Length: 355
Length: 93
Picture (cartoon, each protein chain N blue to C red):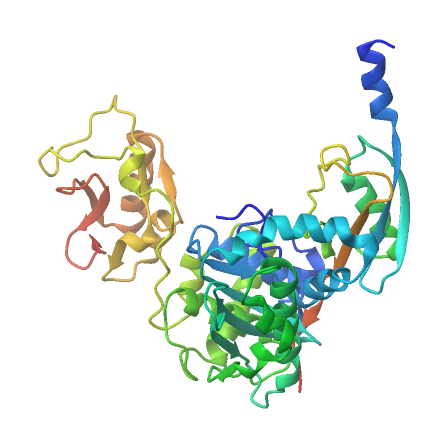
């Protein structure tokens, strides 16, 4: 991965903390801020984005404008040189740049795959805009500045760059405005853009009904409840429950198997774990399918990356669950894998199976 | 001059940095090389009547951490910081 971030990539960059006002905007019909949208990208996508995918800041228009302006200024030569040094790494292979760009009071998604080694440079240029009457002007303004930024900084001095320098509307000519879900109000475009990005990263095809205004409305309410009470709420696991047939992308984290787990490979099933072992059990919601909805179970075990340091800690939660629900719960060792999973016993109790 | 004195001298060295906003307006700050940038950001934001967390402060294309100092950032006299104020979006046609 190149060391210099591409357009203040929020997913790989330092934390962005939205102001209390920015969070409060979710409650009602206010417009959302770029830092809030970047914060949500950051908290939901950390660890989910492949190396060749670059998530740009929603303030990319300002970013491109600020730095493109410096290209022609003599007193900015040092900055331009420093940035060219850091950004030339993005000319060395194929990258896909995705951003919830905000320009003139509207968020929309640009999704551009570029490779400086290829004569045509752009492999695909897609725009997803949640307005039903789309003005192409906003998107073309952002794309034009992206092209100038690529040619001025990342591809500076390369052969194929001549094309970008000579045809200033080259990227705009290739832009395809894709069909996507539409907002029916004047304040949800930021969340529509976010939802499109989540779906794109999951490899889902975007069409006009992949999600609807209703899903976005529910998401907005839940985000407000979550962020105003607990800043750590926004994870893709939570978010994914708002979209039909949406599965979170696989995280780039080390698998739970390597962490030292509740149970080792060889033991027979249903054997009690040894109490003196160092025990770490993680319940990853994506590892399980729930056959039956069980709110108490969800609450106790479906926290993202819940980690138990000892068997005792796990047993306390299991006992709590058993008392609260009247169901009984057993820990079962899985064969051929050290991933731990809990399995409820009894008739209509939840059953968890490794996917 | 002993090493200690030299170190103290370096810490007291002041530089002038410029914060440039999107309209091109520049604000000058005279600070020590060991001052945390947070202090500069807060002062700048309060002067503009906004919260510092709604502004991105960038040096050579990269966001500056509030805990960083000009020394850590290898900033020199008259160096320029670019700032971008967050925008909002919703859009009713």
